[in-house]
Image (cartoon, rainbow, N blue to C red):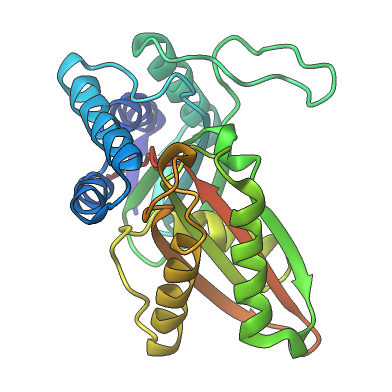
Length: 279
């Protein structure tokens, strides 16, 4: 049995909050660079170049990439042979509090969805736990801005709707979102399971490298179809039109009920932030 002090978790989460908000993953940055080379719309190309410049400035000056530093989502994977001395949940939230204070990150969380009083420290985080068969802890910190989160959607399709129904729903969701989620966007799609499982899958899909392909050829083809159809909408960078509405689409699936076909679409802006560490 491996023992870890909860203070280590706090320290790691604090650092990940700052890192994720200041440095975009190389996969997304490379996707933006590639889209600049392909873009035929002059206005959209100029916007993409400015987005790339913003990423460089944020990294060099250690400033947030975007003023909306998000609500923190944490995927916490822990081995069943690990014992944490102290409360894991308190340790995570303390890490968020410290990270957002130390990194001068905007506090955007309210304590109640209707009374709307700001908590003042961007806690609590939304935490998802997984138990693995090892002696490791993996922490993924995902600061999710709500300009894009608000454009996400879920639908319980009929099994008879099939792949065509899935494609239509995903593309229609992006079409309705238009320029609101600050495109070019990254799209996470969850298919299967139950209502809540599909939503979780769509969020997890955003953690995948934006240029990755599904290991299943059938779903890799679906990702390609969705990417092409979304880009054909010509919403473009920040709504300027052109060739780049999405930087990539990732699909995750799970077995489901004979009567079910849950589909969730989690939209992320071009600032698709996440940072991880293994302890």
